[in-house]
Image (cartoon, rainbow, N blue to C red; front, side, top):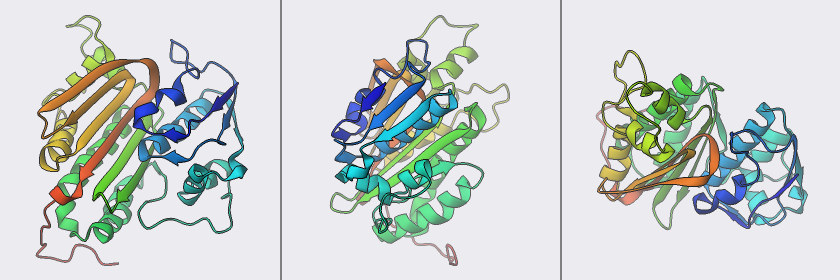
Amino acid sequence: MKKLLPTSLTVQNLDELFVGLTQSNGTPTSLNISIDFKDLSYIDPTGVTALSNLINWLRMNGVTVLFENHQLLSAGCVFLDDIKFFEHFLGSPLRDDAGLRPTSRSLEFIGDNSRMWLKTDFLQWLSRNSGLSFASFDLLYSAILEIFHNIDNHSTARIGAVFAQYLPTKKQLLISISDIGVGIPFTVKKALADTLGIWLDSEAIEKACELGFTSRSVAGNAGRGFPNLIDCVAGNYNGIVRIISGRGYVQFSQKSKRKFSTDMSWIYPGSMVSLKIDMSEVPNIESNSEDFTW
């Protein structure tokens, strides 16, 4: 089976990536899939993590995944090469001069070192590009760290990817975090099976975003991850939070006053959290002590 990637792979057209690759029961449609890169000219952070996790998910389910026409070096492939996408999946970059661009981080896979990556690599890069202090990102750091904790606690596969890009002309930060697991709707519906009937996946995601809701038997500090993230990004930074899982798609924006929610015709295997942050809304907070020593 061949999957031809679209010219532009963004959050707006993820359906073009997943339609035809997953059956209604959430399993792959074929055991041999070839991904054709020849037309790919642009890919955003959401597309990067979705494509990465799709490949890992297919392989995890016993699918042989082949790449085609990536050697043609379309603009999209050059970008993927620079963020170490091909180095990860093929073992080496496509070009001898492939190199990380100042406005993006390399594609990272979430694991035991994620907290250190977030606190050092990511924040150092973000501070350098935005001109803001490390202390300015305390809220954002805590919110993203909670997403990593959720992946660790709820993703059965414990496979996740994160990619960040800074757009200096727009003063926007784009971050996408995705995991391969049972997904938010499954977890929520399982936790509420004794009290509620069948929910739409989007409704289950909305429930997961309610303050105080937790699927854990011992709540502790649970039930604050998504609300804190939405308050931080949509509320404080006039940004957008998109959550995609299973068939559900939920978006929060404009200081949490507007919410868009729908169920899709296709299935996202796992969960994705995509953030768009208006960096002009992030205050520059002075720190009384030295943030880090490099």
